[in-house]
Image (tube, rainbow, N blue to C red):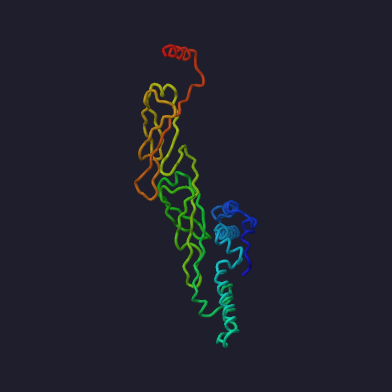
Length: 295
């Protein structure tokens, strides 16, 4: 098996930070994604290589093993253990009577760790498959309701349910959807990180939403009604007379869904921003002057 330089695949140095690796992975994953390159086998192959490189280098423990053992990082510790056992056995053989061990026993074990054959003893060692990492880009409106999605990971379509209320940066684990185990070992897991962009007028903080509503000076002084868009429809707000700039009102249950608590929602907090007129007619100026005299 030829050595795979994961750093070269991502186009980063060995001294690259986690942020550098994440940035390089995102750029290349978008470039070679099968959805953007339909029927392009080369792009699909590159996409798989980029994902594999990210799965190793984005994990501190895996990266440490890879830097030490190279392509055989998954079984490096087993290699060290076997080497230790071999050294102990050779020492024992030198200091006691000869033992009934064939010269090739441990070398066979080493070969099995790195692609060669081995007998029954190595076959009993089960290795768990590596975890896969993937990212899913969504808009805020996409996670207001529970939705089903199809995610392509290493050329395989994986169906998943995205629960309402999931947060930006949250990671969901799907068991058994990672790399295949060896010698009957369990498969690794698929770890999906959600990147949620907000292109709405709302600011989200957990399950609560915040929005600023502009009021003209006349409505803030005299009061009245305004129609407001929320995530689940329109509501009518009654503005009290003499509403001050920065006044907040809370609409219970009009916020964002609470993650994995069906039917429960946070609140929507409205902040009023009083907008002064930018230009006055002569009549308006005259009326304001009269009001000033009354004060």
